[in-house]
Length: 123
Image (cartoon, rainbow, N blue to C red; front, side):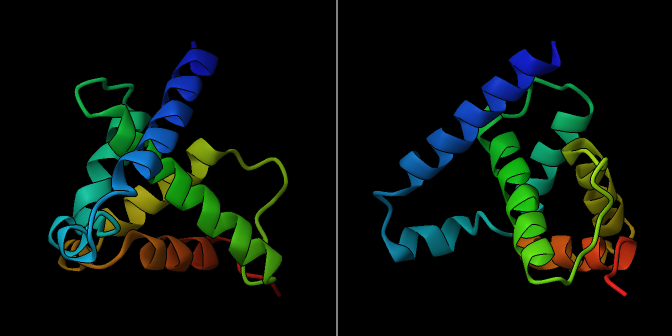
């Protein structure tokens, strides 16, 4: 079940990138896809196994959190245990943002970075 859902989300991430490619900068600015207010419903839907939110938005959330995690670990800013799963990181980021509703208009990668650093700082 999880494997099928993960494959759907992976396809969603790919579709998100491909579908956003032809947009002009002005159009992208109007959509503001990197804002938490856009992405967080996809994160919540993934956690709740809710198919009412587009797989593209769910994939965007997962791709963002996964990418931030990889980059921050490479930079030795985040030192999460090896056994931590992506779903746990998504839960962490969603909780972090929900506890700070005034920051919903900020970019999800920034908030994800802060959440991951707070949970698993490198010493």
